[in-house]
Structure formats: structure tokens, C-alpha cells
Image (cartoon, rainbow, N blue to C red; front, side, top):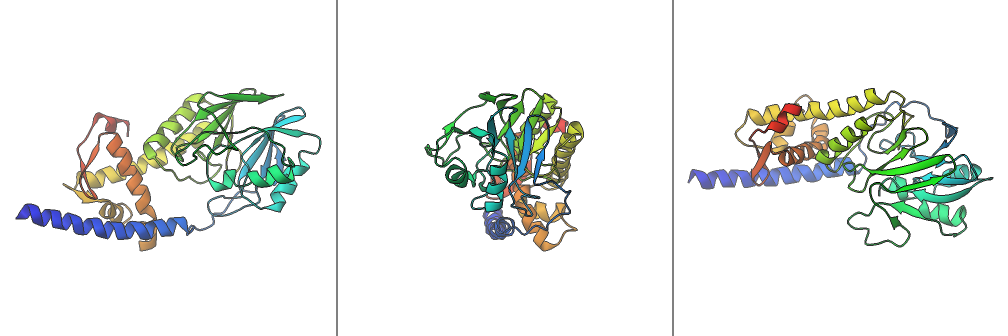
Length: 319
């Protein structure tokens, strides 16, 4: 009888957690995030001999000062990294002003999010005047071979005078996320894997942590992020990102160790005990992503419904 009672209780917890998760999704997806105090970033700025940043004129809680798009090259031909959001005439005008004596050789997309791919149609019609140029991107589930993209893999490279880019697959923020290595400077365009200020969101924490450690191992001279100012203190920033995620992981593990089995919502309530209800709901998705990583690491198992159990593993020695 106790087995059936336990299963019934697990089901009740599951549906309770599902309801909380639904609200959590709405809290996150509707942008309920306060606008942080941000550094000033010039709308257009030449950052090096080969790199000019053009802000996407789309500031917000998740885009910060706006999406950073970059023009690369020291000669007439340029590479454009990312395209901002759709239908923002201020951005198209700013980009056009930087191409008066130049032409786009190709466009490179770091990942599928709308604030990075959204401006493609406007650029094609208003700047390229419908001329076709390569638009490089990694394929993701759901792309279904969209004709406009030339799908490429890890290690692909493209170049113009003064700028040779190598594509480095850095999944985690999204499955199709690329960072871009600028050979001439030994610098890195990090997309949304690392931001100039604040922290980023991710789809898969296990992959994301691997990508952070990969970037750390590359030892770039500087990082040009997808949002926010240029990162000059690279080691400090990458270590900050890694420690931020590991700290939360340690807190979740401590809760798991104190309980035989526990739901993701109950873990959230304990880890974020001092936070308001709305913050806990917003945090639930991140807790679930940490639990997913811990399952991949072999530290935690999911025996029934939304219940989680600590089982321990040598991977934990890295925390």
C-alpha cells in the first residue's frame, strides 16, 4: 500500500510542478526581467583595424544595449557577423553608413535567435538590393534546409583582407551556437555564450559548461560578445561565468544530498528560499537545466515523474 501512496504522492507533485513550470515559462518568455544598469556602448565604433561594431538599436532586458553586429575586414570586402532584429530602420541606416565604400562578401550567423538572424531580410532588400551572398550558419533541428543559409560545421573558415574567421561550435546557449576565432588578432566573437556584462541563458547546461571551458582553453586576446562591451579581461570573465554556474550547481547538490527524493520545485524553494515567489518561478527552469546536466554527469537520477535522487559520481570532484 505504501508503494501506491508514494506513487500517488509523486503524481501529485508532478502535476503541481508542471503547473509551476508553466507559470515559470510565462514569466521568462514574457521578458519579466528588470533592465539592468548598463555600460555605455557607442552605436557605431571601430574596435580594431579589422573590426567595427554596429549596434542593432534593439535595447532590452535580454539584449542589453542591443545586439552587437560586427563588420570585419581591412579592405573593400567585409564580413558581417549577425544581423539584429527585423524592421529596425535605425540599424539598417547605421549599417549602410559603414558600407558606403565597401561591400558585403558574406554574412555569418552565430545562432538562430531572432535578435541575431531577424535583420537578414532587411539587409538583403535594402543594402544588398536582393543580390545573393553566402549566409553561413550551423543547421539545427527545425531548420529543414532553409534555402537562404549555407550550412557549415565546426572548423569551417572564411576570410577577407585582414580578417580570417574560423567557426568553433560552442553549444549550450543553443544547439547551433558558433563562436568565431579571428586569426589575425587571436580574438574571439563569443555570440551569446559570453556577454559583455551580466549572464546569459542556455538550453543545455552540460554543453554550455563544456563550451565555456573550451573558450578558456583558447586563451583569446579579447572577446567581442553578442551583447555588451568588449571583454578585455578574458580569463577573469570566463572564470566568473564558470564559477557562477558551479556555485548554483553546488547549492542544488547540497539540497539533493539531504533528501531521499525531491522534486525540482521543492529544490527551487530551498535554493531560492529568500527570494520572492515570482523569482522562484523564474528560477525553476534553470534548476531543471542544472538537474538535466547532473543526470548527464551521472550524479543524479530521475526515478519517477519529476522526482530526483542524488547517487554521487567522480564527476563531482570537479565542483
